[in-house]
Image (cartoon, rainbow, N blue to C red; front, side):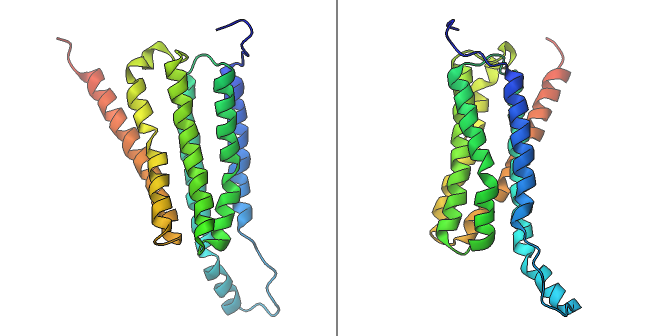
Length: 212
């Protein structure tokens, strides 16, 4: 690494990441408003209100789970041993797109029937996915990752294409059914879970395999 290159310890990036995720995940719930219902508030009126916000609650849950998946996926940064100016800025831009999730989620929670609202969320997810793909691609290409994960670098890079692909599919779906495009992202935690379980099974098999 050149002497003039900015050197930021990876633990500082991890700390910043945890802080931004904590704030973003907390802000998500603010999109669910608790109005002052007209008096007298009867059980029927309150039940109608709760029923009316169920879609917003569902969107909040999915948004929270998506952020949780992104946060868990960031554990891959622990195998990135060194940083440089470019990698720092890729992560900062990625975190900026993460911080935008409460806004894009609130938009579809209130105006999800409009395609533009869905496109705002879809593009938010697309940018998150592309920047995360760029993060790992750059780090592995520049030799900033731990030696033990080098053999898996290509596989990890390919798996990071899942979110951008889903986001592109969601954008196309929005032209047919605006609100339907949001449901495409329900597949994100499913894919993450399947990928994690499959990886652990392969690791266990490799560990338990008898030496020749």
